[in-house]
Image (cartoon, rainbow, N blue to C red; front, side, top):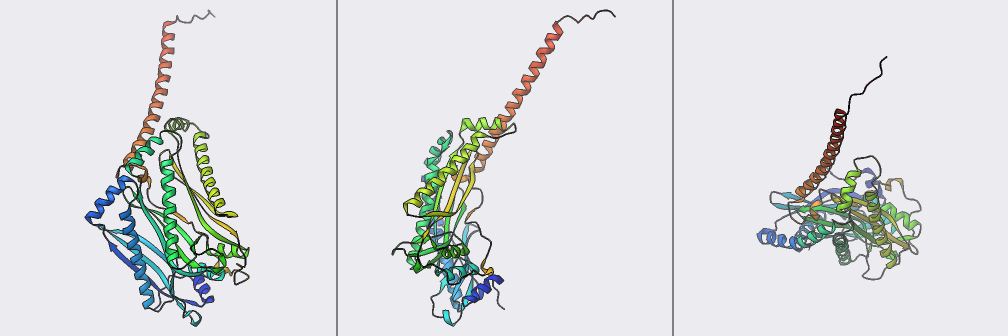
Length: 425
């Protein structure tokens, strides 16, 4: 009895490329930091930036789970694995790393091809193969990081004034590009010249520590025309890459930018009072607009530096780090015109068309990253919300008191004035 996670469309598309579905394959690894590692990671999190011991432990655990998944598929005679995912779960005081995918079997024409593992689905793999991308290996790049006590206090003081908080923007930009570089390095080690279908996932690991992980499929496409040692990265879907190739374009690099802006204490208090009445909040409107414009400008500069013709698939995501503090994230793919990149087929089959998915996932409550003390996230958020509530209550009390005083004064004046005399009828 065959148990496969592939859909009917995936099975149909893979059959056109000489592949058939196999069994679901899994691999796992349960790990612990140990007492020494826990103490060391706590000290590193106070310093801020990357927490190296956590990054290494997560990377080793994920790679061990992926290796066991690949070994299981190879024992069953599979030619490769599609739809690879990697997860992290907490079991008691330990961490389990789980890798899962669906094996695929090859016909005679693919029997001698090297074993591969891919993050893409069956339909997207069809588009990649048709566009000239040969998959090699599921690759990843991750960074575990913390804000740190010093950067948290400095940035916390900066949030009292209105505008960009460079301490946070620089940290987040550096972390994302570090993860991308590690993803590119793994692809280079696999002998690839591209990483397609890149996914960015931000996950809370422990109080005050987050993990940013980027995953994708290391592939080779000789038509990209890149120099040895250069890795093309893209978060575009398989059908988007096929459509680009049909128009004579190819991807260059995944571009990312982050801007963290603060509303400021004075503007924040003013906005609270303005929110009591109906209408636009100009301070908040301008703040969000400036944050988006700054992100797009950073994307534009990086695209110009690498000689891209345009940036496509750009997505803007906004989230609240804490009350009055927002982060805007921009992600897109730089592309350029290439020679002889036409796909193998003239028309993309309907079964290969799938709904596009988000490349950036944000899970859980990430406000702890901007709170310098572990475990103080909810307390800090609750305290600020309480401050807002107190300001509103005080304003209402003052308004009511003013109205009562006015009414009392009017009543007193009436009591002291002589009674009104009406003329006799």
